[in-house]
Structures are given as structure tokens and as C-alpha cells.
Length: 119
Length: 236
Ligand code: SF4
Image (cartoon, rainbow over all chains, first blue to last red; front, side):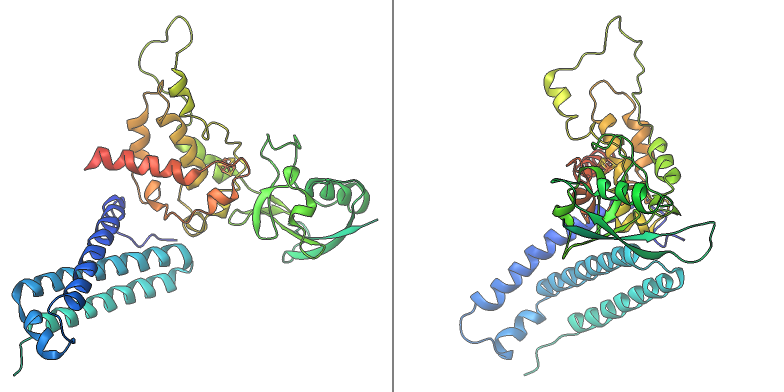
């Protein structure tokens, strides 16, 4: 049965899965601290919106988005590689994995980039 | 006298037809009977057509790996009472390998992968007058590696091995690390060239079935981690 991965060895994918995992944990921690332990008061639109509109925070969100999608998609691909043994299903699911990932990426990027504070 | 039901997957290539399960009653005639004793009782006293491999009957030859109640093991070192569930043991051939007859699988491809990784000492320096010496610490690094008996319990328990017919598998990878990590060996680079491939070390997704399956208590996943680390050090 055909191998549906990159023509490469898989070394980079292995390493970057670990690197992205660690970075995701750090960003997630940062996100929780920012959201729940800074600024005091209840988490309202007025409190959160200015931060979401901040270009640096947008950068962080985009990094989170890209790494999260990469990590998830790579993980799902490995599961497909190991547990989907029929070639047709494997091609279908691997393609679907790509489509879903790109769609989420586009959707997320548009959401993050176009966010503005509404009075 | 107590008896245990052996449910065995039978397959006869000559007779045609699909593999099917057949029940046998095994009498527990003495304490501490092994699964192999049960198979022998069936073959010698009930059905001489039952095919299975065995040789040394003490966990050294590695020929009697089968799947018992869902886990790969050697029949000669597994007590019946250890694995019997409600008085029954279900015995199947090792999964993921071509079936020849009953419990006998084709190990040709498994062994071809073993030889692919050059499982022998490679040296450039001319041979010394006496043996090639190792310090006790260097020798200790080979513990947990050299004991492999090539029973195939690990590779045939691995979902990545089932899914990818070209994957070298945990057994070949453990055996190649035994030489890469050997202080006397100088063939590391040519072996790492073979392993740096999506059918090589990187195909391992750390599922750890191999560690559970190994009847010798070896840890192929740890060996593969050694290979991956060596490959990364070489690359990045
Ligand atoms: S590593 Fe263990 S399970 Fe795998 S072939 Fe060697 S002895 Fe058998």
C-alpha cells in the first residue's frame, strides 16, 4: 500500500511535533494567565476586546493557530497511517485532514486579523 | 482432573477454505504446565495435524511465538494458569504476518528486514592480534539488546508494522541499535543512512506494544529512541 506522507524521511515532522507541543503548552499557559489572572474584575467584552485587538497579541494568536493546526493535523495523519489500512479510505481521510486543516486555518486567521474593538 | 479449553485458529492451505476456530480440551496433568505442553498434548494425543513451531522449549530459540488471548508470547515459557480466562485460552498465529498453516507464519520478510540493517560487526581497522577489547561499562551498554531471540513477538504486535509492509519494525531496529551502540563497531553511519527513512526509525510512533510483547523483557522503543537521537544529532 502506498505511503501518503512527504517524500522525506519524517525526521523533521517527528522533531517539530515535539517542538510545537512544548510551544503550545507555553502559549496556552500564557493565555490562561493573561485571561484569568491579569486585569482583575470579571472577563467581559470590554476587558478582553482591547487585548484581542493588540497586534502583538494577534501575533501570538496566529502562532498558536498555526502550531495548533500543525500539531493536530500531523497527529491525525499518524493515526491514519497506522490504523487505516485500505488505500481508498486512507487517501480520502488524508485529503479531508488537509481540507479541514486549511479551512480552520483560513477561518482562524481571518477572525484574528480582522478583529476590532466595537464601542 | 481439571481441564482447560484451547480455542485454536486452524488454517489448512491444502484444504482450501477460510481459517476457523477449533476447541480442544487439555487435561492439566501436572502443576505448572506451559501453553506448549497443552499444544503438545493436543498434537500427540488428539490431532496430529495441528501445526505449530517449537524447538528448545525454554525461551531461547524464539520459534514458538504466538498470540494467546490477544497478546503475543512464547508458548514454552507461559504457564497455562497465567493466561487462562474462565478456563479458556484462545491461541492464534502471530498477527500481521502471512499465515502458512495453523499457528505457523511466514517469517521470511521479518528476517529479510533483520538482514537489511546489517546486524553484524563492521570494522575498518585491521583486526588486532587478540580479541577487540571493551571496558565493562561499554559492554554493559549492550545489556537489554544482545538478548534478542528474533521471535517476532514485538514486530507482529506493532500497528505501524501491520500498516506499512515496508516498515523495518521494532525487532530489526533493536538489533541494529545493538551494533550502532557497540564500542567496537564502525558501521554506524552506513546503518543510520538506512534507518533515516519513513519506513525506518521514523515510522515508529511510540505505541509501545513491542515493549509489552517482548518475552525477554527487552525494550525496542528505547532502542529506537537511541536511533532517533543519533539521527537528529547527525542532521540538525
Ligand atoms: S526484541 Fe524481544 S520480542 Fe522482539 S524479536 Fe527480540 S526477543 Fe522477540
